[in-house]
Length: 390
Image (cartoon, rainbow, N blue to C red; front, side, top):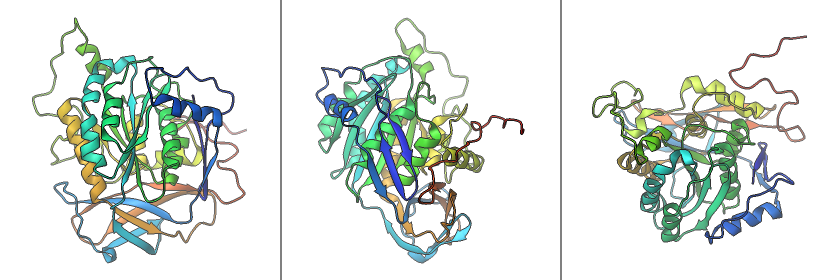
């Protein structure tokens, strides 16, 4: 089932497309039919958004979370305009999480490792009041476990993941996850945790459209990278290649003076400044993104983090970091005073206490009521030259 996302600020709709064939449900999965039946009902959901609520993560120079800030120490700018903060509190909301796990044949050797991580999701992120659903994706999108607060069911669903086709329909899987989270009750911290390669092929939804929906619904997308190369060399008959890097050295460059931990390998602090124009353009025009790392795009575009998940120890560190971050975030609420035209609105949160680092989502798309959700003539995909003027 290919889920398409339609969203505007003020109202957001998440609808499945019509007349798209669906693969037969897996008879071995007791949870799958509930998700498969949704495609026949074809519901349309609408969410009214009157204020902007953004999760804000504050860390010190060592990367530790700072949770003792006062409301008067915060500032927020919307498209460069100062805003009045209407609410600020440490997040104490129970978590609603969708685990989105790639099950393509490219990563089949890592599925056992993902299966063993179930207890990490339930203990480090969900806690006693959380709930989770599990989506598997390759060329098909499969709901292998609907929302449950039973940790054993979540752990079993991850343990029983099976490898499928070669496609990696990441954007379609995220669209389905947004649809599931949009139906959960208010007053819950809604997140997606992706376990996937940094690739997206075969999706019907564009990254720009999915990012727009996630930003407007206030859903953070944390990503943990998998490696098809690691799976290939982990198959029987293959030898693990020696690493070209010395022990303890990360394969990706890290910020200066930062240890090579999963939380620092690809995204620390606010969204990379070089990514902000790309994110704004993708969201404003609901565009596709040719090239680049989709895991970094979705994490930075929703104010979350991207992690390297190569190895059980790294996966445990990543999930532990996500759990601690969710319990240490501030929820900042304001009512924009500059919604005068359809445009992407950048959001910048700051604190007056020196020496601290602040991260939140980079912005949201505002569409005036009565206008289309995107311009009639969108420019070319990000990174591509514009057509010649006539």
